[in-house]
Image (cartoon, rainbow, N blue to C red; front, side, top):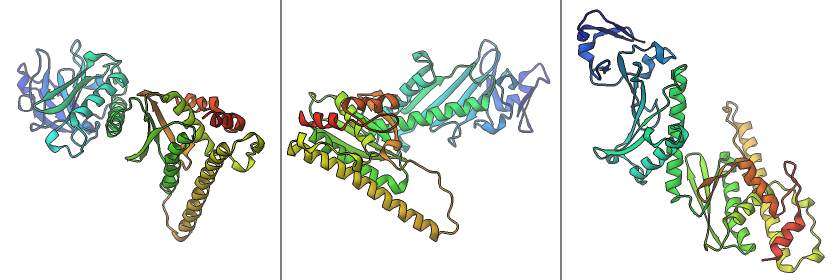
Length: 368
């Protein structure tokens, strides 16, 4: 809790109480403007825990508060938040920075900074470039940004948490994007799987590149693990290859992982031998995925029986379709539902109200 008692005409003798401890403003503060004073404790910032109130209106308007972000409690790489509530001088600004000399990642910290700044610009700052500034301050990769002062007016702590989450998501997104060399002219699909299903689902994703070759499309595929996510990138080898067609094929391929292959009975008389081979390869890959997942499930159940005090684990997706989190096509984020629905154009399946048109798939193969 922070309180201010104007005990004298001399502002240096005003009493500032922080978490029950009293200080002379002259000992911990300096003039910030004609009306306000910047305060620190022994040269350090003030902890977020000192703000017990959930409203900015409860802060002394003459004090400019600098909240400490050193422990990551305000967001990864946030150094401090500067808050001023004086009428006409309202400010709710963030200082975010990376010290390149202490940066351990192989990714360029200044490129990370630029990606995070762009994310914050559109997620928190209404696309207003005046609210976000990127600078190389003393060789630091720094960002200075303001959020809407009205946002935290009613619930300060919730607003701090909201911004913290946005910063952390922006940082993770920036690292993923740079890890893959950008998203341009690529399809990037982000997945999250339960540990016991990750290997089987990853193998199924990689088979998609061979599936594309069977359709006459040449592309490169790449798998990267980042934090708890699996990043699957598909990049055409030629500019003549359509990202739209590849994205539709991926939607169909993900949906096909849950198809009952035993119920699929294409009319053999209508197939040429090469197309029939392609169909059988796909069916075998679907069956291999399901078999591997069943085996892993059985092993996990067996292990759970052996561990009498096993902890309850949060359930994560165990199927390629369920594990899909986000999709980007040529740097544009896709709506997940619309993306998966696009596979219908290639002839999709009996899943979530969609019905597989196996003949359409056969026809598509036969054209290649």
